[in-house]
Amino acid sequence: MTEDLLSLIKENVIQGRIAQDDEGFDEGLVGQPGASELTEKALTEGVNLEDIINKGLTEGMNIVGQKFETGEYYIPDMLASAETVGAAMEILEPHLAQSGIKSKGKILVATVKGDLHDIGKNIVSILLRGAGYTVKDLGNDIAPQTIVEAVREERPQFLGMSALLTSTMIHMNNTIEALTESGLRDKVKIIIGGAAVSEEFAQSIGANGYGADGFQAVKIMDALRNSMKG
Image (tube, rainbow, N blue to C red; front, side, top):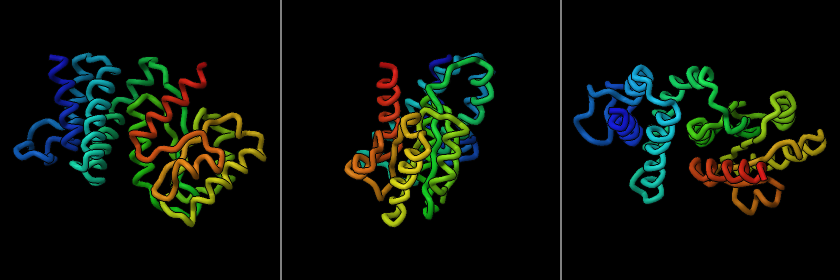
């Protein structure tokens, strides 16, 4: 029964269905429980929280990632699935806090100064939460000094910055320089992403990693986390 429930959660992530009134990519799903109802049911039945996240939500998004890479899914499809995971995680987060399940680490995320685009950042935030990280989203159009102050106050292990525009990506470099001047650069691992940036740009400004999309961002985060252990 538990495995059936987890399988249904996974399938509804793939279908991008938050609630029972939602349509999916396949026909005939309206009226059937969505990811939110199924997550609530799993909690009621005492299903392990980590299983809900790993075997339901994360496995579902892994398949969505594969479909995105092969061109079967487009950005709106991936966004629908990410929002589905986000809705389920909102239900789970109070229970995670009570359960004592340890976070993999804290990450601050922000879209840099002058840039109002946040779809990519929001997808990354949802995927990181689903992967077990504590995420604090500073928002978009965030100035370097604001990010520095947040790093000082929050003491995260990681910082994620996003830029869609070539005209705003310079503020990633400005932020890293401001962190260096404040003596905080060595306290945080920095990963950047967004349409404007590349692996080469990440290396040129001294970032610790570059994620081409949300799925790669999670992999980079896990790799950085493992390197910090060693």
